[in-house]
Length: 112
Image 1 (cartoon, rainbow, N blue to C red):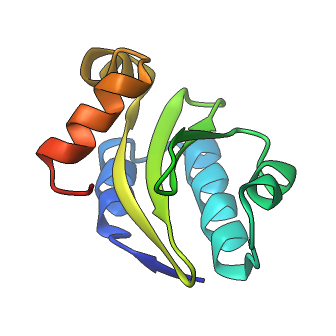
Image 2: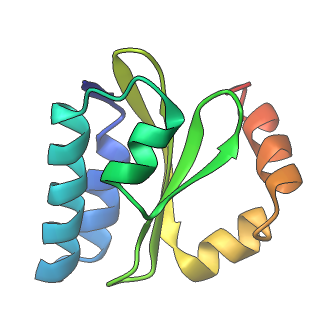
């Protein structure tokens, strides 16, 4: 699969320069996405148990637990778009750990 908006992850990694474990985990996620042949939501959960579907239009959060990093993506047929990336505190502050708040945020950013 193609990955759009990788610059969001690159910016986050620059903010956390020197964190080799975080770099490794994000590189592993990128590799998984690039090689993915997901045809249904269940396939994503099998390959990435940390994925949480937060909107029926194909939006998922990936939880990089080693650094408490959250990555919001939109998964379409042949492309994954990185929508947002931040630490867990930022996630709670913005999204309130609430799917309704996530939906409103996606609407405000014209993703849905």
